[in-house]
Amino acid sequence: QVQLVESGGGLVQAGGSLRLSCAASGRSFSSYAMGWFRQAPGKEREFLAGIRWNGGSAYYADSVTGRCTISRDNAKNTVYLQMNSLKPEDTAVYYCAAVVDYGLDLASIKYNYWGQGTQVTVSS
Image (cartoon, rainbow, N blue to C red; front, side, top):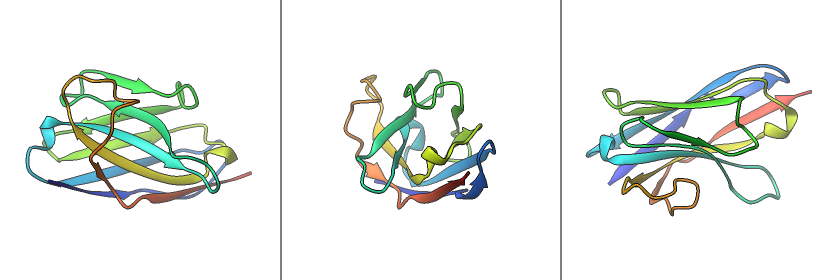
């Protein structure tokens, strides 16, 4: 069982940056692949980025490639999402999620554990 708590969201102007954090509690954080998702009002939840259990590989959706970086610190049981050049269309609730890492596609796998989300609002 893993409990996830996101933080770092807020209001930022277009072109600005934010770093989201996701703190995990529970057992064997380093066994889990981690992902970041977002959901805007009236839209489906969207995969943004995923990272392997050891941080060795990361994957990004086209919508954020070049603007976002996912990273993790297994010693701190934390995963991060650095977001740069933010746009108003990035406004959404951002979620982190975890799944035991068996090497499957991180964009399409079903994540087992989810945080409560953190709101990101980008003003124009």
